[in-house]
Length: 297
Image (cartoon, rainbow, N blue to C red; front, side):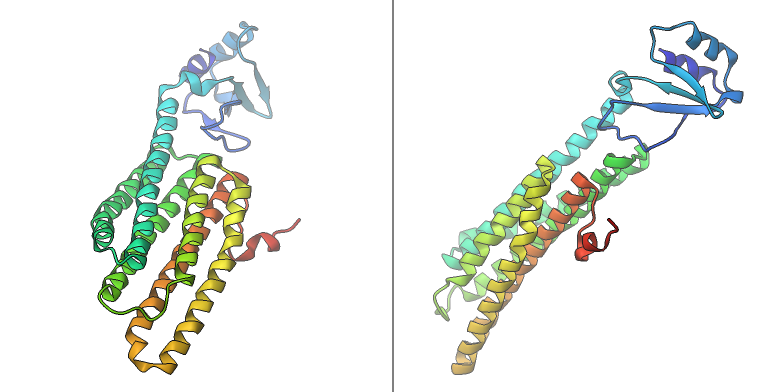
């Protein structure tokens, strides 16, 4: 009530002061305008209402402290609902991408053409969701001009959206190689690649779980797993190069497997990107390119 009365008495809209306010955490809300511009009626009204939230003047600022202001404001409630909707859309897209990655590996290891076709059909839906989520997030940025944690969430959502779409493309790349290998004799038993795929799948799942839970520790575990994926990729490369050197007839099939390993490693890199975004969202720290180690203590 005080906020509405004072706002109607001020000559121009209230503006936020002090620290940026996150719409997703409404413990405090500070609004200000110069006292000299405030209506005397508003000041008198506040002074005569000791039971309402406090109002005071400090350094030519008129501050209103309103507990749970967000709960009374339909626009703010609507914004929070839209943020929740955005997260649900991202998780739906993440589920589609996880499915595509798993089925692409199944197409390779089991020579399953049905699984391959499922991945190819899912690509269009993933691409469409990327466009929808990107448009939705940009619209929220433009309409609400969020700050603090809400701004970090929206920027992280846009980046995660892009990483998920790229994972979907890489799953399609794996399927294309699987289709090429499907009717040819194997170069070697597939051991390292399924192991690599299992680790990559775990990284993707954990990065998305960390995003939902805002779990910094789980996000860090994803970063640590990236080195293990790189080691497996190098082992696959070295072994397949030896096969090609001994038997040039295997070159085409070996190159397909090398590209599969490369695509899996790139999926792991995108999972790492998501984990880095989660750390920035949850803890406000930037660990890209080891930036955290360069930050002053």
